[in-house]
Length: 94
Image (cartoon, rainbow, N blue to C red):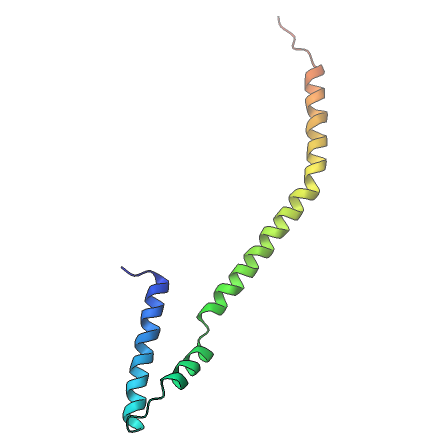
């Protein structure tokens, strides 16, 4: 079973071949493959959504790292205070 990218490539080339056959039939056999390829490439927007998601994901990861960096100092200080307080406590036994 082809992957999504392979399926997209297969569909794209199949559509291009069908478009070429129709164009050749209508123009009396004149070969316009390069023109059709350029038009198909210009109108294809399948990769644009992927780029948007990559940029959005990178921004979210960057924001998460920034938050962790700014909070880590306070968290470490608080953990040290809790640790020293618990260490100083004694356990009473009956």
